[in-house]
Image (cartoon, rainbow, N blue to C red; front, side, top):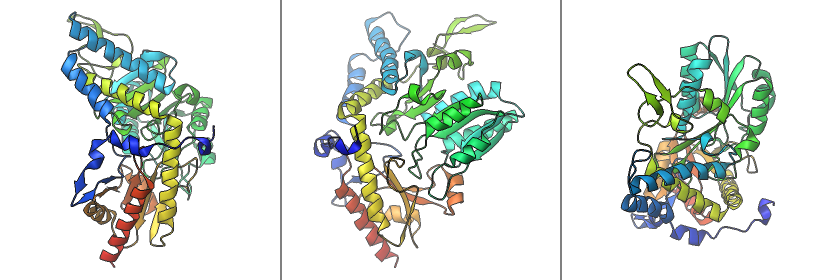
Length: 415
């Protein structure tokens, strides 16, 4: 079904599930446009986590009593629900809960990279990588002697796939790429990147932090060896992320953290590891957060991921058009379309992004300003920082109009 034929979201009803959106500052209602950093949390997610703490708060895999059994079932079934949501046919064994996408990157980098990489190996990233990927693999490269290379982006903020085909070689061991850029909004052809990596017997890690919240994702179809995302960017709680990994690869990897629950047998001399995914989930896990993540998935799927994608694309197109009409505004990333996600990064001539965000805040408009954990990309763009407006299921075109109006006030203040 084309996005043009999808039923529009009932944003008014959706907003009723997010009481925080009714907050006012200086007599003006909050306009929250910082969703690429963290989305707001709806009542069903808050209620699910509250029910856990009120009714069956206990540690998992450790108790015979009723509360522990109920908590264990909820926690284990959360893995099943996540697997179903992202199309991981291998089930719970392929779903590891982490704190966030960053920890998922580090888990693979340390548990796989330190053991598998060495001098002569290559790690290929993109020039638009988030620091979670770039810094992690950069440092693993330094520790192992592996070289780190970067796929260029073109002037429109898209990946140069010809360069990707050249730079990924038989020496490449890992290709790590963002699915959707948190700075440019670019939706990358990740399946094509994975295919190139696999043609050279390299593994592929896809950072889906900006993709899973707002579009259908099928990890089996993408065929990535690893895929990661965070709960707090998809109407879920902070403190929980997901690492998907192909079962055979996870089985071969050594644990990243050690301690309780990730073991099968321990003596004073030796230890053996638990089954997947528990082998990578040491200590007391994020039980309430897992319950909240399931509630968020249920909530989003009730709305419809295709409809969410269409809504974000429409808002991004409208924002792009409104901002592009201003000759004093420079926008980064591709023009609106299927390869641009629901955010717009920009700068206003003569106004630092931090000053612009401060003025937006005076109007109760929340945007992001800075390098968005993509300092090398900003260096390539020739700017120290940028402003970013990012959208989600509860945002409206009227809120984008509020953003544009506040930008006009900033222009007059700095004129």
